[in-house]
Length: 572
Image (cartoon, rainbow, N blue to C red; front, side):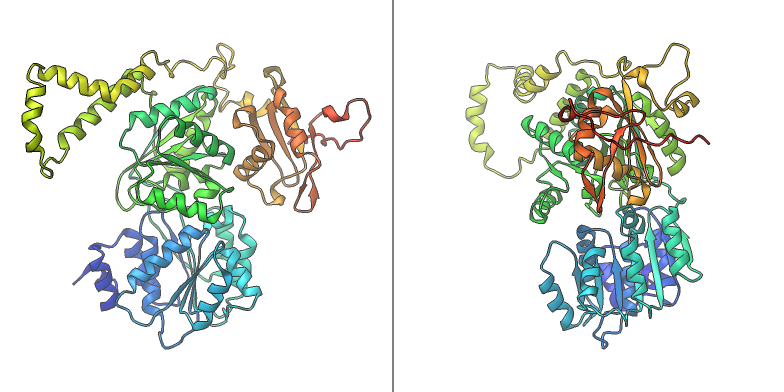
Protein backbone atom coordinates (compact mmCIF):
# COMPACT_ATOMS: atom_id res chain seq x y z
CA UNK A 1 0.00 0.00 0.00
CA UNK A 2 1.24 3.50 -0.90
CA UNK A 3 2.31 5.55 2.14
CA UNK A 4 -0.14 8.33 1.23
CA UNK A 5 -2.95 5.84 0.71
CA UNK A 6 -2.28 4.52 4.22
CA UNK A 7 -3.04 8.02 5.55
CA UNK A 8 -6.58 7.73 4.15
CA UNK A 9 -6.30 9.65 0.87
CA UNK A 10 -8.39 8.49 -2.06
CA UNK A 11 -7.08 6.92 -5.25
CA UNK A 12 -7.17 10.12 -7.33
CA UNK A 13 -5.10 12.13 -4.85
CA UNK A 14 -2.63 9.29 -4.33
CA UNK A 15 -2.16 9.14 -8.10
CA UNK A 16 -1.46 12.89 -8.23
CA UNK A 17 1.15 12.89 -5.47
CA UNK A 18 2.80 9.77 -6.93
CA UNK A 19 3.14 11.48 -10.31
CA UNK A 20 4.74 14.44 -8.52
CA UNK A 21 7.42 12.07 -7.22
CA UNK A 22 6.28 12.08 -3.58
CA UNK A 23 6.87 8.66 -2.06
CA UNK A 24 6.96 9.30 1.69
CA UNK A 25 4.86 11.91 3.55
CA UNK A 26 6.69 14.57 5.52
CA UNK A 27 6.24 14.52 9.28
CA UNK A 28 3.61 17.29 9.29
CA UNK A 29 1.71 15.52 6.49
CA UNK A 30 1.85 12.21 8.31
CA UNK A 31 0.47 13.73 11.51
CA UNK A 32 -2.03 16.18 10.01
CA UNK A 33 -3.73 14.39 7.11
CA UNK A 34 -5.49 11.61 9.11
CA UNK A 35 -6.85 14.21 11.58
CA UNK A 36 -7.98 16.70 8.93
CA UNK A 37 -9.76 14.07 6.83
CA UNK A 38 -12.42 13.84 9.56
CA UNK A 39 -13.43 17.41 8.64
CA UNK A 40 -14.79 18.15 12.10
CA UNK A 41 -11.66 18.63 14.23
CA UNK A 42 -10.05 22.01 14.85
CA UNK A 43 -6.32 21.70 14.22
CA UNK A 44 -3.09 23.58 15.01
CA UNK A 45 0.01 22.60 13.05
CA UNK A 46 3.34 24.11 14.15
CA UNK A 47 6.04 23.49 11.57
CA UNK A 48 8.70 25.47 9.75
CA UNK A 49 8.22 26.66 6.19
CA UNK A 50 9.36 24.14 3.59
CA UNK A 51 8.04 21.11 5.51
CA UNK A 52 5.12 20.35 3.19
CA UNK A 53 2.32 22.22 4.98
CA UNK A 54 0.41 23.04 1.77
CA UNK A 55 -0.05 19.37 0.98
CA UNK A 56 -0.85 18.69 4.65
CA UNK A 57 -4.03 20.79 4.41
CA UNK A 58 -4.56 20.90 0.63
CA UNK A 59 -4.95 17.15 0.10
CA UNK A 60 -7.56 16.66 2.88
CA UNK A 61 -9.51 19.70 1.62
CA UNK A 62 -9.74 18.24 -1.89
CA UNK A 63 -11.05 14.96 -0.50
CA UNK A 64 -13.65 16.69 1.69
CA UNK A 65 -15.03 18.94 -1.07
CA UNK A 66 -18.42 17.99 -2.53
CA UNK A 67 -18.16 18.87 -6.27
CA UNK A 68 -21.91 18.97 -6.79
CA UNK A 69 -22.23 21.95 -4.44
CA UNK A 70 -20.86 24.85 -6.52
CA UNK A 71 -20.20 27.39 -3.76
CA UNK A 72 -17.22 28.19 -1.48
CA UNK A 73 -16.80 25.24 0.89
CA UNK A 74 -13.18 25.93 1.92
CA UNK A 75 -11.37 29.20 2.59
CA UNK A 76 -7.58 29.42 2.83
CA UNK A 77 -6.24 32.74 4.18
CA UNK A 78 -2.53 33.57 3.80
CA UNK A 79 -0.42 36.73 4.22
CA UNK A 80 0.84 37.57 0.73
CA UNK A 81 0.02 37.47 -2.95
CA UNK A 82 3.01 35.23 -3.67
CA UNK A 83 1.95 32.63 -1.13
CA UNK A 84 -1.66 32.88 -2.32
CA UNK A 85 -0.61 32.03 -5.88
CA UNK A 86 1.74 29.29 -4.72
CA UNK A 87 -0.98 27.56 -2.68
CA UNK A 88 -3.43 27.83 -5.57
CA UNK A 89 -0.93 26.34 -8.02
CA UNK A 90 -0.17 23.47 -5.63
CA UNK A 91 -3.85 22.67 -5.17
CA UNK A 92 -4.39 22.78 -8.94
CA UNK A 93 -1.59 20.21 -9.25
CA UNK A 94 -2.98 18.00 -6.47
CA UNK A 95 -6.48 17.91 -8.05
CA UNK A 96 -5.24 16.81 -11.46
CA UNK A 97 -7.26 13.59 -11.24
CA UNK A 98 -10.09 14.99 -9.10
CA UNK A 99 -12.64 16.32 -11.56
CA UNK A 100 -14.97 19.30 -11.22
CA UNK A 101 -13.30 21.00 -8.26
CA UNK A 102 -12.75 24.70 -8.89
CA UNK A 103 -10.33 27.02 -7.09
CA UNK A 104 -9.98 30.80 -7.17
CA UNK A 105 -7.14 32.97 -5.85
CA UNK A 106 -8.17 36.44 -4.67
CA UNK A 107 -5.46 38.97 -3.84
CA UNK A 108 -4.56 42.62 -4.23
CA UNK A 109 -2.72 43.91 -7.28
CA UNK A 110 -5.00 42.08 -9.73
CA UNK A 111 -8.39 42.96 -11.26
CA UNK A 112 -11.06 42.65 -8.58
CA UNK A 113 -13.78 42.60 -11.25
CA UNK A 114 -12.23 39.53 -12.87
CA UNK A 115 -12.05 37.83 -9.47
CA UNK A 116 -15.71 38.69 -8.80
CA UNK A 117 -16.75 37.24 -12.18
CA UNK A 118 -14.89 34.00 -11.43
CA UNK A 119 -16.48 33.74 -8.00
CA UNK A 120 -19.94 34.18 -9.49
CA UNK A 121 -19.34 31.22 -11.82
CA UNK A 122 -19.04 29.06 -8.71
CA UNK A 123 -15.91 27.83 -6.96
CA UNK A 124 -15.29 25.31 -4.20
CA UNK A 125 -12.00 26.56 -2.69
CA UNK A 126 -11.04 30.22 -2.24
CA UNK A 127 -7.42 31.14 -1.49
CA UNK A 128 -7.21 34.73 -0.29
CA UNK A 129 -5.08 37.46 1.21
CA UNK A 130 -6.85 39.26 4.09
CA UNK A 131 -7.18 42.71 2.50
CA UNK A 132 -8.74 41.58 -0.78
CA UNK A 133 -11.00 39.09 1.02
CA UNK A 134 -12.39 41.83 3.30
CA UNK A 135 -12.98 43.99 0.22
CA UNK A 136 -14.97 41.19 -1.44
CA UNK A 137 -16.99 40.54 1.72
CA UNK A 138 -17.91 44.23 2.01
CA UNK A 139 -18.95 44.29 -1.66
CA UNK A 140 -21.09 41.19 -0.98
CA UNK A 141 -19.21 39.52 -3.84
CA UNK A 142 -18.46 36.38 -1.83
CA UNK A 143 -20.75 34.37 0.43
CA UNK A 144 -18.97 32.70 3.33
CA UNK A 145 -22.11 31.39 5.01
CA UNK A 146 -21.63 27.90 3.55
CA UNK A 147 -17.88 27.65 4.16
CA UNK A 148 -17.17 24.49 6.14
CA UNK A 149 -13.37 24.64 6.44
CA UNK A 150 -11.17 27.65 7.19
CA UNK A 151 -7.38 27.40 6.92
CA UNK A 152 -5.09 30.10 8.35
CA UNK A 153 -1.68 29.55 6.78
CA UNK A 154 1.41 31.36 8.11
CA UNK A 155 -0.75 32.71 10.94
CA UNK A 156 2.18 34.29 12.78
CA UNK A 157 3.20 36.17 9.64
CA UNK A 158 -0.32 37.55 9.18
CA UNK A 159 -0.41 38.80 12.75
CA UNK A 160 3.06 40.35 12.43
CA UNK A 161 1.79 42.20 9.35
CA UNK A 162 -1.10 43.70 11.32
CA UNK A 163 -3.95 41.51 10.06
CA UNK A 164 -5.40 40.63 13.48
CA UNK A 165 -8.62 42.62 12.93
CA UNK A 166 -9.01 41.14 9.44
CA UNK A 167 -8.66 37.58 10.77
CA UNK A 168 -11.24 38.31 13.48
CA UNK A 169 -13.60 39.69 10.83
CA UNK A 170 -13.20 36.64 8.57
CA UNK A 171 -13.73 34.13 11.39
CA UNK A 172 -16.81 36.00 12.58
CA UNK A 173 -18.22 35.80 9.03
CA UNK A 174 -17.72 32.03 8.68
CA UNK A 175 -20.17 31.10 11.41
CA UNK A 176 -21.13 27.75 9.89
CA UNK A 177 -17.63 26.37 9.59
CA UNK A 178 -17.17 22.81 10.80
CA UNK A 179 -13.44 23.14 11.51
CA UNK A 180 -10.62 25.68 11.62
CA UNK A 181 -7.08 24.66 10.71
CA UNK A 182 -4.24 26.94 11.80
CA UNK A 183 -0.70 26.49 10.51
CA UNK A 184 2.21 28.54 11.83
CA UNK A 185 5.98 28.41 12.12
CA UNK A 186 5.94 29.93 15.62
CA UNK A 187 3.38 30.24 18.41
CA UNK A 188 3.46 33.79 19.80
CA UNK A 189 0.73 34.88 22.25
CA UNK A 190 -1.30 36.51 19.45
CA UNK A 191 -1.61 33.20 17.60
CA UNK A 192 -2.53 31.40 20.82
CA UNK A 193 -5.26 34.01 21.39
CA UNK A 194 -6.77 33.23 17.98
CA UNK A 195 -6.95 29.55 18.87
CA UNK A 196 -8.59 30.27 22.23
CA UNK A 197 -11.19 32.61 20.77
CA UNK A 198 -12.22 30.69 17.68
CA UNK A 199 -11.25 27.03 18.07
CA UNK A 200 -12.75 24.27 20.18
CA UNK A 201 -10.43 21.68 21.72
CA UNK A 202 -8.01 21.83 18.79
CA UNK A 203 -5.70 18.94 18.05
CA UNK A 204 -2.18 20.41 18.22
CA UNK A 205 0.73 18.89 16.34
CA UNK A 206 4.28 20.21 16.60
CA UNK A 207 6.99 19.15 14.17
CA UNK A 208 10.24 19.83 16.02
CA UNK A 209 10.11 22.08 19.07
CA UNK A 210 7.83 25.09 19.30
CA UNK A 211 9.42 28.19 17.77
CA UNK A 212 12.41 26.05 16.79
CA UNK A 213 14.40 26.41 13.63
CA UNK A 214 14.91 23.97 10.79
CA UNK A 215 17.47 21.33 11.78
CA UNK A 216 18.76 21.26 8.19
CA UNK A 217 20.08 24.82 8.46
CA UNK A 218 23.63 25.69 9.48
CA UNK A 219 23.54 29.00 11.39
CA UNK A 220 26.73 31.06 11.13
CA UNK A 221 27.50 34.61 12.24
CA UNK A 222 30.30 37.07 11.56
CA UNK A 223 31.26 40.01 13.78
CA UNK A 224 32.41 43.14 11.95
CA UNK A 225 32.41 46.90 12.57
CA UNK A 226 29.16 48.52 11.44
CA UNK A 227 30.88 50.58 8.74
CA UNK A 228 32.28 47.40 7.14
CA UNK A 229 29.01 45.49 6.75
CA UNK A 230 28.90 46.05 3.01
CA UNK A 231 32.46 44.88 2.48
CA UNK A 232 31.75 41.82 4.62
CA UNK A 233 28.63 41.05 2.56
CA UNK A 234 30.57 41.36 -0.67
CA UNK A 235 33.29 39.06 0.61
CA UNK A 236 30.78 36.41 1.74
CA UNK A 237 29.18 36.45 -1.71
CA UNK A 238 32.57 36.11 -3.41
CA UNK A 239 33.57 33.29 -1.07
CA UNK A 240 30.47 31.29 -2.06
CA UNK A 241 30.54 31.47 -5.88
CA UNK A 242 27.73 28.96 -6.38
CA UNK A 243 25.30 30.53 -3.94
CA UNK A 244 21.64 31.15 -4.81
CA UNK A 245 20.58 33.44 -2.01
CA UNK A 246 18.21 35.94 -0.45
CA UNK A 247 19.79 38.85 1.43
CA UNK A 248 17.61 40.52 4.08
CA UNK A 249 17.82 44.18 5.11
CA UNK A 250 15.76 46.12 7.62
CA UNK A 251 14.76 48.97 5.30
CA UNK A 252 13.85 49.45 1.67
CA UNK A 253 16.48 52.21 1.42
CA UNK A 254 19.20 49.73 2.40
CA UNK A 255 17.85 47.10 0.00
CA UNK A 256 17.88 49.50 -2.94
CA UNK A 257 21.24 51.06 -2.06
CA UNK A 258 23.05 47.73 -1.65
CA UNK A 259 21.49 46.32 -4.82
CA UNK A 260 22.63 49.33 -6.85
CA UNK A 261 26.18 49.10 -5.48
CA UNK A 262 26.43 45.36 -6.21
CA UNK A 263 24.99 45.74 -9.72
CA UNK A 264 27.66 48.34 -10.51
CA UNK A 265 30.27 45.80 -9.44
CA UNK A 266 28.90 43.15 -11.78
CA UNK A 267 26.67 41.02 -9.54
CA UNK A 268 23.38 39.54 -10.72
CA UNK A 269 21.04 40.98 -8.09
CA UNK A 270 17.79 42.93 -7.80
CA UNK A 271 15.94 44.45 -4.86
CA UNK A 272 12.44 43.59 -3.69
CA UNK A 273 10.75 46.21 -1.51
CA UNK A 274 7.51 48.06 -0.89
CA UNK A 275 8.12 50.80 -3.49
CA UNK A 276 7.86 48.35 -6.38
CA UNK A 277 4.60 47.95 -8.27
CA UNK A 278 3.05 44.50 -8.47
CA UNK A 279 4.20 44.19 -12.07
CA UNK A 280 7.78 45.03 -11.07
CA UNK A 281 7.62 42.52 -8.18
CA UNK A 282 6.42 39.80 -10.54
CA UNK A 283 9.22 40.56 -12.98
CA UNK A 284 11.90 40.42 -10.24
CA UNK A 285 10.50 37.20 -8.78
CA UNK A 286 10.23 35.64 -12.25
CA UNK A 287 13.91 36.32 -12.90
CA UNK A 288 14.90 34.98 -9.47
CA UNK A 289 12.83 31.80 -9.76
CA UNK A 290 14.27 31.08 -13.20
CA UNK A 291 17.76 31.65 -11.72
CA UNK A 292 18.54 34.48 -14.09
CA UNK A 293 19.34 36.26 -10.84
CA UNK A 294 21.86 34.77 -8.45
CA UNK A 295 20.87 37.06 -5.59
CA UNK A 296 17.71 38.73 -4.33
CA UNK A 297 17.84 41.44 -1.68
CA UNK A 298 14.63 42.16 0.19
CA UNK A 299 13.00 43.67 3.25
CA UNK A 300 11.08 41.37 5.58
CA UNK A 301 7.72 42.81 4.53
CA UNK A 302 8.46 42.43 0.81
CA UNK A 303 9.81 38.88 1.18
CA UNK A 304 6.90 37.45 3.16
CA UNK A 305 5.33 34.51 1.40
CA UNK A 306 8.23 33.95 -0.99
CA UNK A 307 8.69 30.25 -1.58
CA UNK A 308 11.54 29.42 -3.96
CA UNK A 309 13.13 26.00 -4.21
CA UNK A 310 16.84 25.27 -3.83
CA UNK A 311 17.91 28.51 -2.10
CA UNK A 312 21.36 27.68 -0.77
CA UNK A 313 21.94 30.66 1.53
CA UNK A 314 20.07 33.29 3.49
CA UNK A 315 22.16 36.32 4.47
CA UNK A 316 21.10 38.69 7.23
CA UNK A 317 22.76 41.99 6.36
CA UNK A 318 21.64 42.92 9.88
CA UNK A 319 19.91 40.82 12.52
CA UNK A 320 16.21 41.62 12.89
CA UNK A 321 15.03 43.31 16.07
CA UNK A 322 12.09 40.93 16.35
CA UNK A 323 13.74 37.59 17.01
CA UNK A 324 10.84 35.59 15.56
CA UNK A 325 11.50 37.27 12.20
CA UNK A 326 14.80 35.37 12.14
CA UNK A 327 12.90 32.08 12.01
CA UNK A 328 11.04 33.20 8.90
CA UNK A 329 14.16 34.56 7.23
CA UNK A 330 16.24 31.45 7.81
CA UNK A 331 13.31 29.24 6.78
CA UNK A 332 13.74 30.33 3.15
CA UNK A 333 16.60 27.85 2.86
CA UNK A 334 16.93 24.22 3.94
CA UNK A 335 13.49 23.37 2.58
CA UNK A 336 11.94 20.00 1.67
CA UNK A 337 14.69 18.04 3.41
CA UNK A 338 17.57 19.90 1.75
CA UNK A 339 20.34 21.57 3.70
CA UNK A 340 20.90 25.32 3.81
CA UNK A 341 23.11 27.97 5.38
CA UNK A 342 22.02 31.14 7.17
CA UNK A 343 24.74 33.79 7.48
CA UNK A 344 24.34 36.79 9.79
CA UNK A 345 26.54 39.88 9.75
CA UNK A 346 26.65 41.25 13.31
CA UNK A 347 28.07 44.15 15.23
CA UNK A 348 30.07 43.40 18.37
CA UNK A 349 27.25 44.76 20.53
CA UNK A 350 24.79 42.21 19.08
CA UNK A 351 26.25 39.09 20.67
CA UNK A 352 23.36 39.04 23.17
CA UNK A 353 20.97 38.61 20.22
CA UNK A 354 22.85 35.52 19.09
CA UNK A 355 22.44 34.00 22.55
CA UNK A 356 18.73 34.82 22.51
CA UNK A 357 18.32 33.23 19.08
CA UNK A 358 20.13 30.08 20.16
CA UNK A 359 17.70 29.70 23.03
CA UNK A 360 14.66 30.53 20.94
CA UNK A 361 15.25 28.14 18.04
CA UNK A 362 17.24 25.59 20.04
CA UNK A 363 20.16 25.61 17.62
CA UNK A 364 23.87 26.31 17.86
CA UNK A 365 25.21 29.39 16.08
CA UNK A 366 28.79 29.09 14.86
CA UNK A 367 31.01 32.18 14.98
CA UNK A 368 33.09 32.24 11.80
CA UNK A 369 35.83 34.59 10.60
CA UNK A 370 35.25 36.70 7.50
CA UNK A 371 37.34 35.11 4.72
CA UNK A 372 40.57 36.86 3.85
CA UNK A 373 41.23 38.20 0.36
CA UNK A 374 43.50 35.24 -0.39
CA UNK A 375 40.81 32.81 0.80
CA UNK A 376 38.30 34.37 -1.58
CA UNK A 377 40.67 34.18 -4.56
CA UNK A 378 41.53 30.57 -3.79
CA UNK A 379 37.85 29.60 -3.49
CA UNK A 380 36.95 31.33 -6.75
CA UNK A 381 39.92 29.79 -8.52
CA UNK A 382 39.07 26.20 -7.62
CA UNK A 383 35.38 26.78 -8.36
CA UNK A 384 36.32 27.89 -11.86
CA UNK A 385 38.65 24.92 -12.33
CA UNK A 386 35.87 22.53 -11.27
CA UNK A 387 33.59 24.10 -13.87
CA UNK A 388 36.35 23.83 -16.45
CA UNK A 389 36.82 20.12 -15.77
CA UNK A 390 33.06 19.49 -15.86
CA UNK A 391 32.48 21.35 -19.13
CA UNK A 392 30.54 19.25 -21.63
CA UNK A 393 32.61 18.90 -24.82
CA UNK A 394 30.52 16.09 -26.29
CA UNK A 395 28.42 18.50 -28.33
CA UNK A 396 30.00 20.68 -31.00
CA UNK A 397 32.53 20.06 -33.73
CA UNK A 398 35.57 20.86 -31.59
CA UNK A 399 37.74 18.38 -33.51
CA UNK A 400 37.66 20.77 -36.48
CA UNK A 401 39.62 23.35 -34.50
CA UNK A 402 42.05 21.04 -32.74
CA UNK A 403 44.80 21.11 -35.42
CA UNK A 404 44.88 24.91 -35.34
CA UNK A 405 44.87 24.91 -31.54
CA UNK A 406 47.70 22.40 -31.40
CA UNK A 407 49.73 24.53 -33.79
CA UNK A 408 48.99 27.72 -31.88
CA UNK A 409 50.06 26.26 -28.54
CA UNK A 410 52.86 24.04 -29.79
CA UNK A 411 55.53 26.15 -28.07
CA UNK A 412 53.50 26.82 -24.90
CA UNK A 413 53.69 24.52 -21.90
CA UNK A 414 50.59 23.19 -20.15
CA UNK A 415 51.55 25.17 -17.04
CA UNK A 416 51.66 28.41 -19.02
CA UNK A 417 48.26 27.71 -20.61
CA UNK A 418 46.75 27.22 -17.18
CA UNK A 419 48.37 30.41 -15.91
CA UNK A 420 46.93 32.38 -18.82
CA UNK A 421 43.46 30.93 -18.26
CA UNK A 422 43.66 31.87 -14.58
CA UNK A 423 44.85 35.38 -15.43
CA UNK A 424 41.92 35.96 -17.83
CA UNK A 425 39.37 34.76 -15.30
CA UNK A 426 40.79 36.13 -12.05
CA UNK A 427 42.69 39.32 -12.77
CA UNK A 428 39.85 41.46 -11.33
CA UNK A 429 39.66 39.35 -8.18
CA UNK A 430 43.40 39.41 -7.68
CA UNK A 431 43.54 43.18 -8.09
CA UNK A 432 40.59 43.80 -5.78
CA UNK A 433 41.78 41.50 -3.01
CA UNK A 434 45.52 42.02 -3.41
CA UNK A 435 45.71 44.35 -0.41
CA UNK A 436 42.36 43.45 1.16
CA UNK A 437 41.84 44.56 4.75
CA UNK A 438 41.42 42.02 7.52
CA UNK A 439 37.77 42.39 8.52
CA UNK A 440 38.21 40.32 11.68
CA UNK A 441 40.06 43.01 13.60
CA UNK A 442 38.51 44.30 16.83
CA UNK A 443 35.87 46.96 16.22
CA UNK A 444 37.74 49.77 17.94
CA UNK A 445 35.30 52.52 16.98
CA UNK A 446 32.18 50.48 17.68
CA UNK A 447 33.27 48.74 20.87
CA UNK A 448 33.45 51.41 23.56
CA UNK A 449 33.92 49.11 26.53
CA UNK A 450 36.43 50.10 29.16
CA UNK A 451 39.17 47.57 29.96
CA UNK A 452 37.96 45.02 32.48
CA UNK A 453 34.25 45.78 32.02
CA UNK A 454 31.92 42.92 31.18
CA UNK A 455 30.44 42.68 27.68
CA UNK A 456 27.90 45.49 27.40
CA UNK A 457 25.83 43.47 24.93
CA UNK A 458 24.16 41.58 27.70
CA UNK A 459 25.40 43.29 30.84
CA UNK A 460 23.33 44.87 33.58
CA UNK A 461 25.19 48.11 32.91
CA UNK A 462 23.78 48.41 29.40
CA UNK A 463 20.25 47.42 30.38
CA UNK A 464 20.08 50.10 33.06
CA UNK A 465 22.21 52.83 31.52
CA UNK A 466 19.95 53.41 28.54
CA UNK A 467 20.89 57.00 27.85
CA UNK A 468 24.51 56.82 26.66
CA UNK A 469 25.14 60.52 26.19
CA UNK A 470 28.81 60.15 27.06
CA UNK A 471 29.21 58.01 23.93
CA UNK A 472 27.71 60.53 21.53
CA UNK A 473 24.10 59.31 21.80
CA UNK A 474 20.95 61.16 22.79
CA UNK A 475 17.47 59.85 23.38
CA UNK A 476 14.29 60.88 21.59
CA UNK A 477 10.72 60.59 22.78
CA UNK A 478 7.95 59.83 20.26
CA UNK A 479 4.24 59.42 20.95
CA UNK A 480 3.94 56.18 18.95
CA UNK A 481 3.88 52.77 20.55
CA UNK A 482 2.55 49.23 20.54
CA UNK A 483 -1.09 50.34 20.51
CA UNK A 484 -0.46 52.08 17.20
CA UNK A 485 0.00 48.64 15.65
CA UNK A 486 3.80 48.56 15.80
CA UNK A 487 6.09 45.82 16.94
CA UNK A 488 9.80 46.58 17.24
CA UNK A 489 10.86 45.56 13.73
CA UNK A 490 8.03 47.42 11.98
CA UNK A 491 8.59 50.52 14.17
CA UNK A 492 12.29 50.51 13.34
CA UNK A 493 11.58 50.22 9.63
CA UNK A 494 9.00 53.03 9.84
CA UNK A 495 11.28 55.59 11.51
CA UNK A 496 14.24 54.75 9.27
CA UNK A 497 12.17 54.94 6.08
CA UNK A 498 10.60 58.24 7.11
CA UNK A 499 13.91 59.83 8.11
CA UNK A 500 16.03 58.19 5.39
CA UNK A 501 18.68 57.37 8.00
CA UNK A 502 20.83 54.27 8.33
CA UNK A 503 20.43 51.74 11.12
CA UNK A 504 24.00 52.44 12.30
CA UNK A 505 22.92 55.76 13.88
CA UNK A 506 20.49 54.03 16.24
CA UNK A 507 21.06 52.43 19.59
CA UNK A 508 18.42 50.83 21.79
CA UNK A 509 14.67 51.24 21.21
CA UNK A 510 12.36 51.05 24.22
CA UNK A 511 8.69 50.62 23.20
CA UNK A 512 5.69 51.11 25.48
CA UNK A 513 1.94 50.98 24.79
CA UNK A 514 1.48 54.67 23.98
CA UNK A 515 5.01 55.97 23.32
CA UNK A 516 8.61 54.97 22.71
CA UNK A 517 12.16 56.11 23.38
CA UNK A 518 14.75 55.95 20.60
CA UNK A 519 18.49 56.10 21.26
CA UNK A 520 20.25 57.86 18.37
CA UNK A 521 23.57 59.43 17.44
CA UNK A 522 23.49 63.12 18.42
CA UNK A 523 24.45 64.21 14.91
CA UNK A 524 21.43 62.44 13.42
CA UNK A 525 18.85 63.42 16.04
CA UNK A 526 17.88 66.67 14.34
CA UNK A 527 17.27 64.99 11.00
CA UNK A 528 14.98 62.39 12.55
CA UNK A 529 12.99 65.00 14.48
CA UNK A 530 12.60 67.15 11.38
CA UNK A 531 11.40 64.13 9.41
CA UNK A 532 8.81 62.83 11.89
CA UNK A 533 7.68 65.61 14.23
CA UNK A 534 4.35 67.03 13.07
CA UNK A 535 3.60 64.32 10.52
CA UNK A 536 0.31 62.42 10.59
CA UNK A 537 0.02 58.69 11.29
CA UNK A 538 -3.37 56.97 11.54
CA UNK A 539 -5.08 60.33 12.11
CA UNK A 540 -2.65 61.23 14.89
CA UNK A 541 -0.03 63.97 14.88
CA UNK A 542 3.41 62.56 15.62
CA UNK A 543 5.31 64.35 18.38
CA UNK A 544 9.04 63.73 18.64
CA UNK A 545 11.60 65.58 20.76
CA UNK A 546 14.65 64.98 22.91
CA UNK A 547 13.59 63.03 25.98
CA UNK A 548 14.74 65.63 28.50
CA UNK A 549 14.76 68.86 26.57
CA UNK A 550 13.31 70.59 23.55
CA UNK A 551 15.18 70.21 20.30
CA UNK A 552 15.02 73.30 18.13
CA UNK A 553 14.83 72.79 14.44
CA UNK A 554 16.91 75.08 12.23
CA UNK A 555 13.65 76.59 10.97
CA UNK A 556 12.60 77.43 14.54
CA UNK A 557 15.68 79.46 15.42
CA UNK A 558 14.94 83.01 16.53
CA UNK A 559 11.38 82.28 17.67
CA UNK A 560 9.84 80.50 20.59
CA UNK A 561 7.88 77.36 19.89
CA UNK A 562 5.71 75.51 22.35
CA UNK A 563 6.60 71.83 22.45
CA UNK A 564 5.32 68.65 23.97
CA UNK A 565 8.01 67.13 26.15
CA UNK A 566 8.46 63.51 27.04
CA UNK A 567 7.04 62.50 30.41
CA UNK A 568 9.49 61.41 33.04
CA UNK A 569 10.25 57.74 32.64
CA UNK A 570 8.84 55.68 35.48
CA UNK A 571 11.22 53.25 37.12
CA UNK A 572 9.96 49.86 38.23
